[in-house]
Length: 440
Ligand SMILES: [Zn+2]
Image 1 (cartoon, helix red, strand yellow):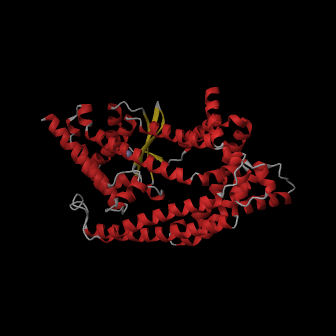
Image 2: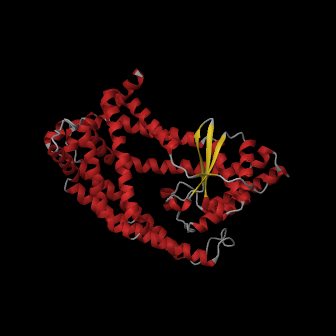
Image 3: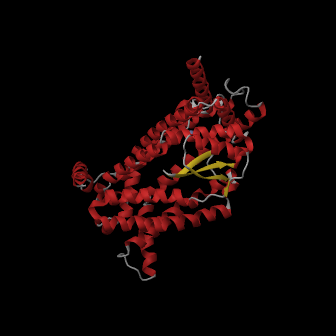
């Protein structure tokens, strides 16, 4: 622990200038944010013409009907147009808010609200929560016209989402600030433990609808899990239509007791042997400990953020640069300092996200190979077409989700955590043929 603190101390020495130098942080944040937005717009402009292609890629030609292809192209085009316009609109809004000191205004407004109820500025935690909620609503309201275009997010769901945000955010912030104030200068390991615990709790309490019915699929999955010694405790099926993420199956739980979750959309669209192949892929993630590795990477990421943070915690020039009054800046409230620090980190975060996607795509590739090689691992002839089955399931899901068929490589590298469908099908084919060469 002491070694850790002395190393962290060295980092702080290098960043000591933050607490004294009057740097124009606001200008820096605005320029970086515009660079990111313009780069993302450029990616969309690269991707856009691909939606006008009239033929699917050769690898997919026999699997996707002309009508489905046309639908997917049209859907992609609409989405891209919307993403381009809404991205620029949000960036203009952010720019205006930053320019006119909306952060500082929210802090002051939360303070005057509290004063009405007789609470002074000594209740920093309460003011911090009020501040975050004001920021949240203040920045959500002007984006409302955007959600009108997507009726799914309209009224009841949107309000529910907001209510949920309030219910979730408040206790989380409260606990975060408590840990922070309690641990003082030595907050790094404690806050990391707090975040890790929070992530684990979210995994355990995450709501899931129903247990799995008996039948061929259940038998197949249980037998596959048994052969691989996967500690399967429960098998769940969830309603995929209500989720925004286009996932198909995943597992979660503790090392000795795991649960598998399958989306009903996958079950409806694919044959049991194809669903089994998707599960083989998921079990590949488990076999190579991919979630644990991802968690380790994200912990390193969180550690880096926390290690850099103290330099920004007691830095009045950062707050004054964002229009906070001198009286607030003299003793920066923890949460204000943390949010401003997050904005300053934007460029780092963009690179981290690209790196994480690269790692994740490598993992997908490993899991696909695992599924293809399963017959050798388990010495089971019946699994010799695992790659074909997985390919069929992936295509069915892709078509159903109207996912984009033609993808620009740079766009994909920046946005996607999974290889494109064409890449995966090619990969599956080459794993299969390598295998056949080995065995003959
Ligand atoms: Zn995967």
